[in-house]
Image (tube, rainbow, N blue to C red; front, side, top):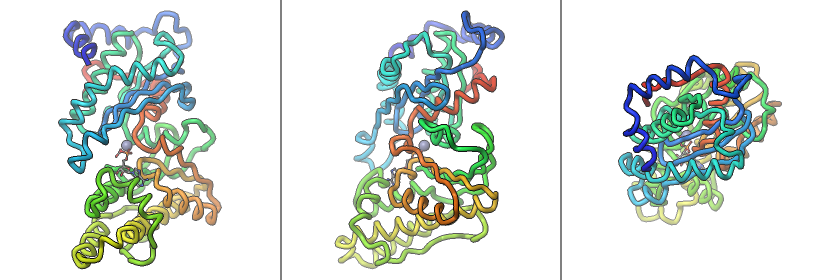
Length: 362
Ligand code: KG4
Ligand code: ZN
């Protein structure tokens, strides 16, 4: 914490500005090609403080994630003010650990990428200010990246074989969208949720069932003990030919079920979890496969925190095989928020010449 604020105090803004202008017009000493390979990624958009060192946008040299789940758990959701404070406490240690574990040493880091948004502003500011100070302190090029583009690039970590174009379903706590992806940094949104994100629905249903926060993992585990067909919850397709989603209806349906079965629902929690999960998974899978068919694409990717869901992974794998498509899903630990994905997308932006400015903000 202290070094970040010390940097901010020691160098007034105009000094920063001059250094930044120099950085934009000249390459680093000893850097002949200007090509950036080793990127330090930093992520602090919500309740994970994360740093990672990634080589060539694909090879993870280190990835450190400090989760704040225990801090927010008693409140049943993320408390923004607490999140910011915890990021400040953790950021220096997490970045140091990522650099040490990478084994490359600070002098071999070629650039820095940091999440600029979307996310909680106070939380984003911590990682962004740290990255700004770190990059300027060391004379490194740096770039602010979109968190969602990070998730989309998580599918290339450790496996660079997914060809363009492909269709991606991004399912997280804040977003549920389908994209036609044409390059690491080029994509077109085909649809999105009109209300709640799928992850948000998992979290809210978990809360209603008294299973705590965050809800995705616990619903996933609970559902394995239940019968997904016992309680048929509604599938909201909206227009079946379109790619938008809506998850507020199913959330209300679960709430109504709990209210109308007040005396018995406690014995049915695994069935409620399984029925809810099945309804969400069916809609997500159907729309992703249809979107890929519309674009005549036979490669699909599943990314974001909800991509860790075992039923979704299994169902999509089966449906895609039937449709003759190949599926790419990151390893479970790369589905949730992490900084390796930030470094991965940052690598492509930095090599395309993108540079953040000193007066950039979250
Ligand atoms: O991508 P992420 O880590 O953060 C955001 O960018 O939002 O996604 C977090 C979301 C939470 O809503 C969490 O409940 C959900 O991902 N999640 C899951 C599972 N693991 C995490 N949802 C369903 N099944 C899971 N196994
Ligand atoms: Zn995320």
